[in-house]
Amino acid sequence: MKKLLKGTRQVITEDNHYLNLEYYLVETNYVEQGTSNTAYGIEIMKEFNGEVETDIVQKITSHKDEAMQIMDKLIANTVTPMSMVIAIDELCSLKI
Image (cartoon, rainbow, N blue to C red; front, side, top):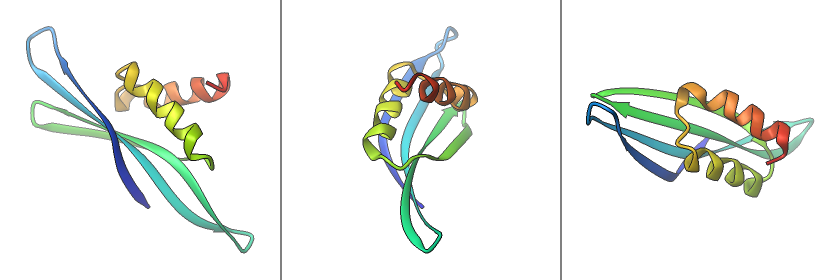
């Protein structure tokens, strides 16, 4: 598995604390029925008040450009690890 940082967001909360988000493209190589394949997923890491929360969805698609389109939507909407799975599910259902 390989992770590439593709975007960051910094949000100021109502009580003037900083919430930092990092968005990673996750590349996974695997073998299925004797054939080598590559799948792309997304990981989001949130750092707030010294605590780190992370979530990852692997193997969303075998197309890097499709994974990047999903990632761009997540970054634009400041999606956090807690809501990532639901957001990805909705985006995949809508075919972006």
